[in-house]
Length: 396
Image (cartoon, rainbow, N blue to C red):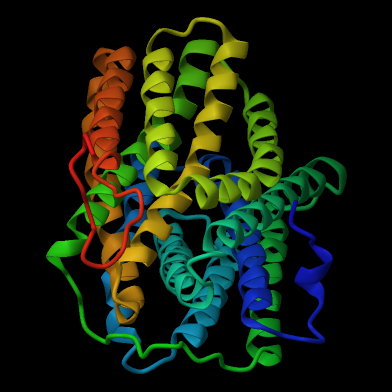
């Protein structure tokens, strides 16, 4: 497991420690926002399901527009952009409790989401530039473990603040956002600028030879929506889970990710991207098929946690791109890929929400079909991807 003392050792700053610090800062604020949002919007904002649906779609807009990162890089360095994005995320979270109206939540949600999506876009680019091809899978796994730890602490803070300290929600938000703002300021003031080995392209890049990567990213966005929206909804709809039971499930997911994410990174490094992605999508087909018919709550929870573990295999998508890409394309393609990933986030929930009213099982059968498409795409990934050999025959 990642050794967290090194995260706080700022006496010898380096790019890896900066990534770890930022990776911890983001999920703390975002975790607090996510844990409180629905209850806050309904109980203190007086909003209904239609309002929340609009707000959730609104939240995805910055992700769809993540290609805008490329234009910001004309005026600000990537490292600074990542840190300023964290500041925006923290401020948006901290202000949320002060504006419990639909208009107020439109404002704070946009602030939070711009910070979140632009940070995530730039962080992916920086990680693929700063980590070597050999070390990237393990290091990305360690970053996932750090993010899981931060999320656990965020959920713990929300529970303690509301149940033990009886704090008003406004101050729970302030503390959650304040932690991220404080850590972003530490990153801004403590770490010197780090230069990329290769000057990054400052224009949008769409290359035919990256088309398999684009397809994998698009299908990954569709898979994420089914997991985030409908797998969680299944627990409430079919098994009547309460908020405390959902929270315990999230806690279990976080603990499992802290332990397994670095190991999965090592697995990707040893197995290669083709085999790792194949394992992910075979597992995903089975999970979605099981979701459609499961009628025993403990099995449903086990499936949900296994589904969450499979998310860590997404490391293989990133390292596949790192191996085939022109090093100058990392920043531009990070923005483009985030936009591609969020096409599904904007369209899919509404379509599948209608299908859910007719048949929840049909939603997961469609999810299984999508996973089969991803499996076919995974088999096009070469065993040893390099520039000039971006894909092979699925039977190769």
